[in-house]
Image (cartoon, rainbow, N blue to C red; front, side, top):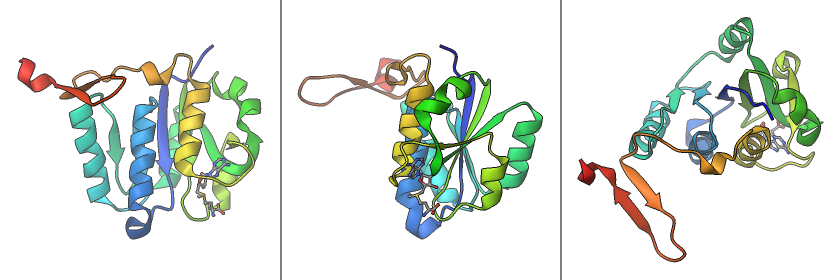
Length: 181
Ligand code: SAM
């Protein structure tokens, strides 16, 4: 199966006080499931720094770009041949959209917090529901990235990490790679 070579998340409607934790989880989940970065359409420098700190410790090149303009990012992405997948419980159910989405090379996955502007529905190549029931943007991102992946995202490597977990049946085993140098 094919899958997009590049995936970025666009997070809309983030309210720094209220959504701090959930937007952090959107970013960390996107990173863990193979996205290259997250564009945050709000000002929250602290949040982007926190995610960058995690990325620095746990490896890979995930980035967060803070306070971006969603309109110009979507326009640029489309001009460069990218596609837009907006996650909304009102959309086409994900299993029916995966065959098309997995064919594109560059995918922007849009998730909301508060009500998403209707323009997003019109700009999206696909409005996709992860099941047509309300739940969470974190779950929606995880399931979407898992379903469109060609290889298992849970087996992904994160090069250059300070820390590596050694899976254990019971207990917590972590190697500090900085001690190995
Ligand atoms: N009240 C908001 C509205 O009316 O649009 C939605 C709030 S919901 C918790 C926040 C985000 O989670 C949505 O914008 C959407 O991206 C995502 N989401 C929630 N349930 C979803 C579902 N079943 N499928 C896809 N995305 C979903």
